[in-house]
Length: 113
Length: 110
Image 1 (cartoon, helix red, strand yellow):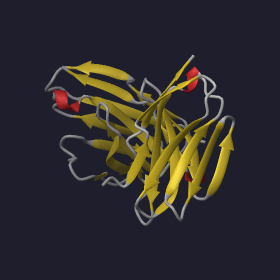
Image 2 (image 1 turned 120 degrees about the vertical axis):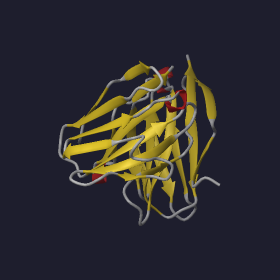
Image 3 (image 1 turned 30 degrees about the vertical axis):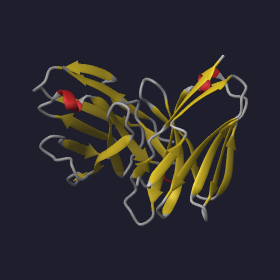
Image 4 (image 1 turned 30 degrees about the horizontal axis):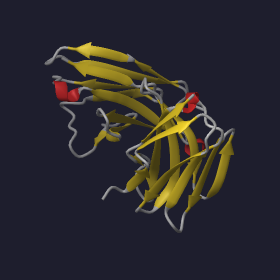
């Protein structure tokens, strides 16, 4: 089963700056998913990242704010750009392991001050 | 109405108690997942179900496809079971992302 290394685990950032979150998977996967979990809320899908093509964004999320890279089948990054306090959330990546279910990264707890 | 509804929202139990968390959904699904989220934010997949029942240690998950309902049971609960338990579904005909319930915060007291 896939193991995901997600970095950083947490960060405190100034408003107006950007943060890039990385996810490294120990096996090749076709699709990776990026989620946001706002305080006290459940997970919301930001985008689906396929290798070799542009990410597909969900309603309410745009590429300029959350650019995603997927340079190969084991790695992806999500950038949170021009941050505001409303971006304070947990961000998680995930992969679909088929019949074995889903594997999630350990999460990035972002606080914007 | 949310597509995935969980109950209860919060649950406090004494160590050793039998615990049940419920999940109802209103859409056709390809599979239902039970997930566990610890305070640090990381999520662990506990079960993936499309029918019947699965058991892993003290955890049991059941699903009734006709009633669109699933339950997660914890037998002989322990303080280390304290976490948020999340029900999520893969929607039939959709891309392979999940739709999540709001989660159940479980606290098991010693």
